[in-house]
Amino acid sequence: MASFQFIAAALFLVAAAVCGGSNAQLSPTFYDNTCPNVSSIVRGVLEQAQQTNIRNAAFLTRLHFHDCFVNVIIPSLPGCDGSLLLDNADGIESEKDANINRALNGFTVVDDIKTALENVCPGVVSCADILAIAAEISVVLSKGPSWEVQLGRRDSRTANKAGTSGLPLFNEDLSALKAKFSAVGLDSTDLVALSGAHTFGRAGCLTVTPRLYNYNNISGNVDPTMDPTYAQTLQQTCPDPSTPAGVNTNVTLVNLDHTTANGFDNNYFTNLQNKQGLLQSDQELFSTSGADTVAIVNRFGNSQSDFFTSFAQSMINMGNISPLTGNNGEIRSNCRRVN
Image (cartoon, rainbow, N blue to C red; front, side, top):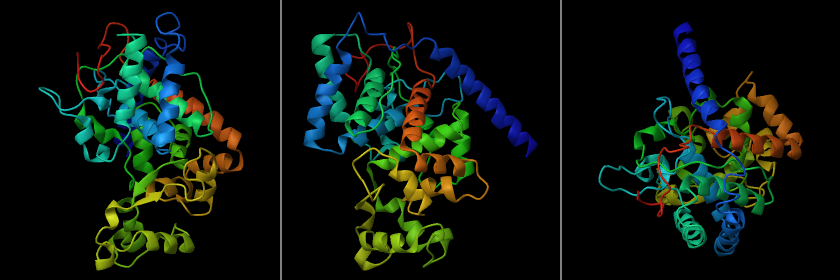
């Protein structure tokens, strides 16, 4: 146990050093002279995208998270670097092909944003910064908080498919989740606040059926941390995949927040308090006995303003995970390929 704690502490210090060192190089005024209308241009594209598909807000927010949250334990590997957007090419194994990223959407919206920016400010705004700006505007368009987006990231010339192992999984317990956040310099408040992005969006039934029919690998067992009525409702949407009725269950989508699926609010936390978190990784935040996350869930569930304030700061913290700055990387003209 002591050796594990030492390793975890060492990893935290490495990540904190990497994040802290790059933090000072980012600035909310980075494009004031070179592309002063960057935010309004991105917002215009996103407003149209929202009219086409209201789910685009959740898609874009998730893309920023998945871009930043690769495994950056090795200091030379960047985090928020636009590498998620790269397609397969010579020498590039796309992060999109990792199992955890296969269900991601919103890439065509990023393409549209990049095209709009290149028409006005060619070769100026990085794809990594596009993801950061788009995430903030997407949350605002969904009635969530705003924050001062830190800018100045540059784009990676390579992808890091292996690094997607650093992304939290839907079926991980709290200790595993906390370890992954700690490894990139984020704490329990960041973990709970950023998990609150599950206040909008959807997930496949495959992420919840183990809790409904085979919890702890016991056939017919339902996760006891799930409200029985909520479990019965989910079973109607997500039939047992081992039965004829559930043959297509895994591709069916279910709302992460069953109360306000497309709005950004604090209902995610009241759901957890009522044992109605969809994913195991969600409910673990509240149902793990003695965990420090329980008090944070209660605080956010009791005060939407507290959640909004913490979420905004945690998005800034996450956006500072080891970005490329200065002369490192490049500014891609096409987010899907290197120049």
